Image (cartoon, each protein chain N blue to C red):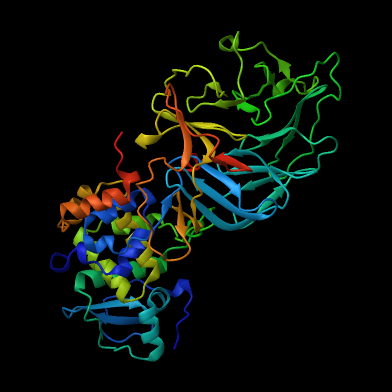
Length: 186
Length: 359
């Protein structure tokens, strides 16, 4: 079980089908195969780390039935990019108040990585990250989703995320009452 | 894939992760999107709607308590303050306190009980201590022959330099008494003191090396003739003007428009703020309560630079909109309606603080 390879040895994705000691092969729900650095997979995903440690990795492609090929490609892409990036000081939260969730701000390349995704791809990626126990990728994707709704009205949020308004008038009024401070007009 | 399941059915644990990254002010919109999303919302109370009245739960040592006039609730955090220290001034999130021989400075939002002690005060205790919120601390003497300001400056490494005192005795000084419940006010880089007869005094930092005295100015023109009041408070308005509020209990109502703002006074610090809360507009609030508010035990939680009180227990938050100012004594300018004053309870040892500028 060689989990802890040095960063320098982390390799570019290589489209090799045969088993390789430094990579693992993952299979999407629609049967596509993807290769990812074993070191990065184990470091970034608690689920994959568990599978690698437990020896339940299939050399012919470990089945990830819950993840489609587009999302899996993004996961693998993220792992490989992460393996090649040098963590910066920005990873340390600079917040000062007493009870700040210790979120780490996404790095520049991580922002770019999620910015180019369509809404559907982002949705699938956040679910894949959740399924695979990828805390850092969850940080980055949830950060992106929160940015998409920051400062918006309920109507605007529904529009961005294509959500159907399932409230009755009475319920909406109840929310306005309960959170009255947010609905004062100037 | 996304079309079939859709954002509105995102699992709750993921919704919570998103919600935790949203500024508090967007939480209501998040909840308003759909029922499923609202189901992950947790109770919180914004800190920035109005200034808050900070007091200590017991005199002496004690947990910090923030009274919100908007919610008419007291929010208590477990941080304790130095025993037997008196509140001196509040600048944003900074609270300055004074004990017998020392001045203490604390950041209300920093780690538990973190208090910074300034160099010892080496003779008479200061009448007032005013902090500019960054580097300068003024200890002000305002009584009698001894008047002037001592100064301490914070170095880059965060430590405070020794106090630099004014010259000990002012030649030919006359007896003045400053308004006892009102701090000197920093305005345009100088420190202003309001005296009981309506005179203003100014301390100019650049002249500290000459003597450190306060320069007594003439009475402001508007005070001429009828300066008669029970309490007077000096403050800098939200527009950066130096203003005074004079409180009396008899006489003709004053017709001045606050232009929709609210004035929070009655403590060492006084604040004038714009407010979106309609029932608060054009009113003056004093730290006097008609009935004692419920206490909620909370943490102060920062979300994207916005601060809110989050209850430590998971008891559901009660609806709070109904209060409409019935809990705290206030006076609408120009109003001739009598307001019960003497039946109200004063919130002792309290001071207004403002978190709206902490963003």
